[in-house]
Length: 126
Image (cartoon, rainbow, N blue to C red; front, side):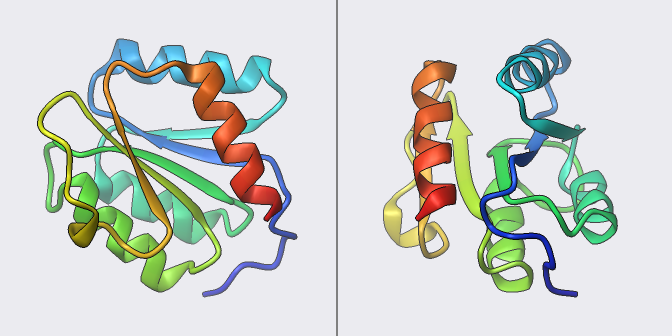
């Protein structure tokens, strides 16, 4: 448990069950110079996070199949890997800030990936 790579590392996990959306985000972040991992549900995401302590940012959709939704996954990540930058996205109604883990951001879909990248990079350097 715990993370050993400096917080400024450019490594992200994208958790999205819609394959085309996930692949587009993987390509976008890869082209921007990030090391990218991806998962289609929270269960896969947890396995990846446990294996790759260098992950510094997680972008997760809210609605996904599996044992937990994206909000529960974000709480798990915040508790287990506290310095991780968290973005929670959804095409449905916004998630109230009171339901989000500390220092997590909600983004409605569709979102501008360039703006998202700037936000992640500024939070990762904070």
